[in-house]
Length: 434
Ligand code: URA
Image 1 (tube, protein in one colour):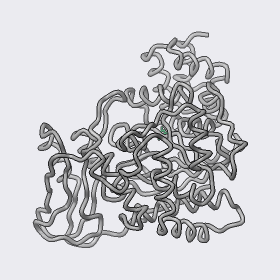
Image 2 (cartoon, protein in one colour; image 1 turned 120 degrees about the horizontal axis):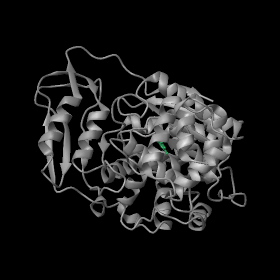
Image 3 (cartoon, protein in one colour; image 1 turned 180 degrees about the vertical axis):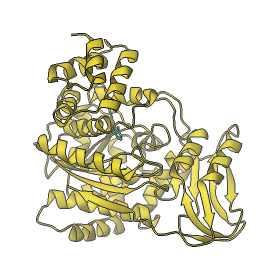
């Protein structure tokens, strides 16, 4: 078999066989296929797509390269959570411990931030000592004790996704719907979960900006998972403005902790409760989502989720006292406030621009191996719909290096749109597909 033939098959909109998919994915992961041919093949997939049958094969092939986690001897149902990614999306930090506090096992293989969207793995690494590269054995030990574990992809856990994530980012194929679906589902197969809730973002800060694309992705996740005997609930949610107020790794950990202390921004708390409730209801099908949400609310308010988060940090080598002493997390050395040029209502906060500005200041990476600054980011003081006065603070940029401050400031100023009339309210949760 030759890679050039596979590129031509997909370029000409023909279908791959399982053997051809295995040949490509295994060869690329082992380093036998060069990036330039792999990029061409991914671009052909971007334009020609994958049929449902091909997508099942592609997903299973990615996941089958290493043994799936056998969680059969652990108590309780095993339910996964994933997000397609967005700006300020720190729900995994809250939802994982929260659902574990309800007695459900939550294995989480998480990723790094790419382009303007943050990644749970980077956020976790802002906690001193936290080890986010667990072996399958260590991962299972944490799960057994804490009920939740979080690790990045490794050579032993979906290595194909690790390599493809980087190549997709560099080759302009990150937005391909079948490549997103297979990336997510291959990790969930490897985790050994029975079902999962996927937060499919839509809007300027999402991989799928248009609702029609988000809906196609959400449906594809449900359909492909069903073919693999897994249950998926896809929740399509807003990513046209950042989620919560904080954007940037340590800043987002602080905000997630605040939410687990019973505070935190309303949109972040509401979405976390919705996702957690859907996971609890999936594990306990005789329950309604409303009753599961009541339970999730109680576990968040009474400190049970935070207790689980502390346990998770400790089991993964981190210092749980950082949760009580934010000065132990990376903190930026300087702050620059951005104020509103006029009075009015905030009608738009372009999530993409806020995310790009945070990346410019060092919070995110353009390439998977770029160094990032875990301390820096942006904290919003207002959200869409708020009425503000001229000169009132809109947000602050927290930074260590001044080099890109001017450019980032311009981007943030452009991200805020002020109008004289109140904007129409946008829903936080658009649709649920299952
Ligand atoms: N999350 C993933 O794991 N993969 C993607 O491609 C997008 C979001």
